[in-house]
Amino acid sequence: MSLKTDVLEAIAGKNRGLLVNDDDKIKILSVVEKLEDENPHPQPFKTPELLEGNWRLLYTTSKSILGLNNFPLLQLGSIYQYIRMESNKIYNIAEINGLPFLEGLVSVVASFSAISDHTIDVNFERSIIGLQRILNYISPVEFINQIESGKKFLPIDFNITNDNQQGWLKITYLDEDLRIGRGNQGNMFILAKEK
Image (spheres, helix red, strand yellow):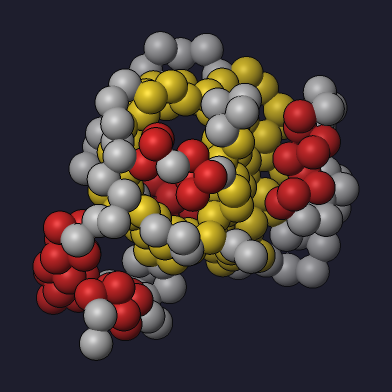
């Protein structure tokens, strides 16, 4: 069995990190560290075609992301991160499932710049929050196309100007369909590339 398979099996059924206990966290960290040691692309910015694209979150330790599941009658749905290398933009989209017609969406747009062969500075620029129906949300790709066209969304669409809304992300593993990163707040992110 491969290390990559070990990681995917360790996070299977953990609902992106919502269903982990302390033992699970230790096991996941252990197998992830082994896989990171075998990173086939330790300088990911030399292979931008691998970074570019649409990614779906499989697992995270980020309390701010997992905390989106704490609203009554709502559940955290799919979470996506779309990377656009040409424009140095990252689009984070979290779908929130709930009662019919009350499905929500939380999106954050950020710019990034490489500060090493494996680390980027991230500057959060814009946040969009609302009901999917009001935002006319069909799919992540369609939504990003609307953002890139300059469309403003109601009810909540605002620029993020606080200097504290910056961070960094180190890409610790990258291949054709899996990416692992670690953020400045100690969070881990495991994502699968969308086909």
